[in-house]
Image (cartoon, rainbow, N blue to C red; front, side, top):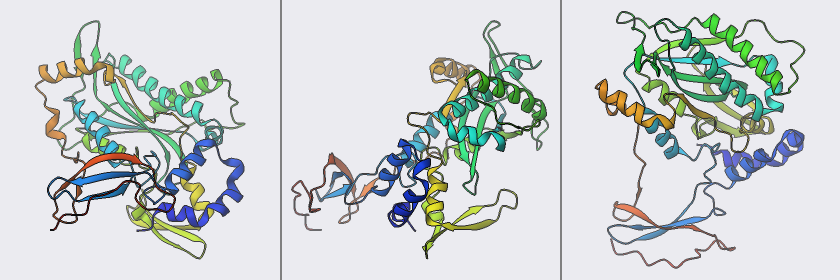
Length: 370
């Protein structure tokens, strides 16, 4: 496995020389955090074996949400929270894509455009749900912003996972759309109609925000809507890159002769393919997806909002639905095991600053005889 930190260490100077005028402060923070993640320059934590009392110092992870080496547990925690909010209804995955003509605008004003992209996607499905003859109420949705394609090209789009169900606050009713016959995916909304409304809402929001439209933008936009059954598989898919950057380090297959090669799965053929780029260009391909500081890429709307925990719990009781049965994709945090006896090690102290010569800055007891 080739670590992204080693790629940064090799090509950082060339990268800064070519892309310095395109970098924002969050790019520099991400670059520094990933480069020093779990190295001798990182703060350490002291762990002690619960059985034989053996102690060691373990480097902290950088904790940056775009580092492929970190945030695994945070992704699992997010997934567990979403699974607890599942309701008994057929789920749909809706994808709202920003046209290519508007991507330069998003790159120049990411904070504003990304926020509008998330809000307008939600406003679109809420409008359709309120006007639908079977639903006629407020829906719930889990929205996640992705900014990359599988080739890591700049491709902002929003995924919404939503049940075909609504809550009518005035009538105090729970309404769902009946699923189609077994073996066939259900129907939620017409994707062409969704695209037209989404286009109108986003262009109006961009104008209201004071941003200048590009000279040309397409008339026909792309919105995809498909059934995903219980919703749990779609949530696992969305959580894969939520806190772990846009590329797995296992997918970086070569770094030599000034070039980096990574693999990805072609969305059309389903086959693994490889892409080779100069090292500096590869780093920009990765770092261009760093989000603005403080921006929340995952949001819950409608009756799936965190403020609606009591409502969701009441629905699950009344509808006799136990979401715990669908949580097979949630994995516990991997423990640190003792090299001497194999027992679980416990964290004793954290954030220990490294000494200049690299030696431990805290005394460690000699390991017990094993």
